[in-house]
Length: 434
Image 1 (cartoon, rainbow, N blue to C red):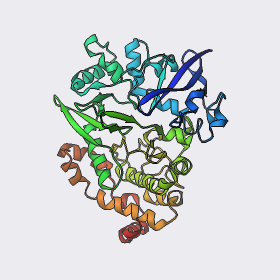
Image 2 (image 1 turned 90 degrees about the horizontal axis):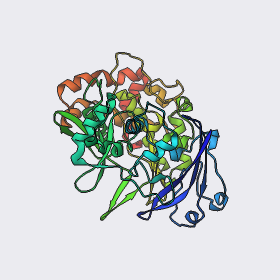
Image 3 (image 1 turned 90 degrees about the vertical axis):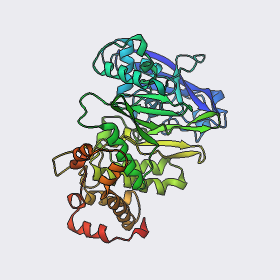
Image 4 (image 1 turned 180 degrees about the horizontal axis):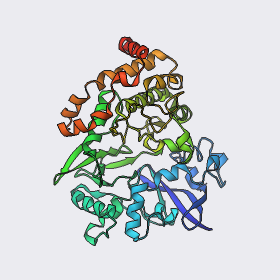
């Protein structure tokens, strides 16, 4: 085993400040353990941000001063650090840059290889004097980034003229090809490219689905589809950034995986009720009610559109500077999955019948989200009424007839996912409870 010591920086008051020292104990390709110690000067800052809201909270600074801290639940890695690390695609980009096989870099190498435009308000560097590394390409580089991403997918070398992808692509999470880009005004966007083997136009499908979610009353980031020589690219505005005049404020980000405090393997046993409990523990008290109800609405929406990619990393939270607390982030990574199966399941547990994607199952555990069943029914009714018009919404947001036909098997009718008695309740419930 070997130990690496790295330094974590936090973006506070429009500048980078060293937050503390991260120690990683690892074998050749496996992270065995982590520890972290906050810097004394950092803890003296009134604007100090917590590196991890669960394992490294700063509610009692005296408790953590001069102490080597470890992840909760015997995890090998801090959730806050994991969220700042590259995910599947970012790791592929770094491996292509290093010209090594998949999963052969150390966790320290993955953390250090990611540009400073990584998600949230943290950065990880080799030393206290290491400078920030830009991690976003100009939006005019989209064509080059797409070409480089295609070469990485195919396992081909990336020529020197396409090396912008190494910085811009390493900051991106998820498994699909993507890169961070800045538009002409400096606003940061996530560009999501088509992947080899896509069964349909994923960019337009995700764009139209999120616009449909917006009409259902869910919080959704700004997004648009850009045509790149006949190849669609989805642009999603990075919601962990806020423009303040000529500067940019970075918002801390934590995934649902971090707030539930588990690893990827254990997450398979978790459900929406666990996320609701995390909201009650970590979200600003003034927004707990709104966020638990929105989480319930997102679960219901996923049931209607057959989105089973709803794992804990695809639920996020941001630290709101106006609240000095956490809030549910805008919705992201929602794409219908067409299926011929009548019985369908989500990734997360829905209710007392496990992952079964039905409204009866969702309402079986409504009290995890709201004390009133009537409120839960009104939320379901609101989403159902809007979802009945999904074809029109998709047409208005740019989807063509072929894509609509391809996605139709994913979209569920009320009779597909609700018992006759529940259907009657939903049809006749009062919207005044929502």
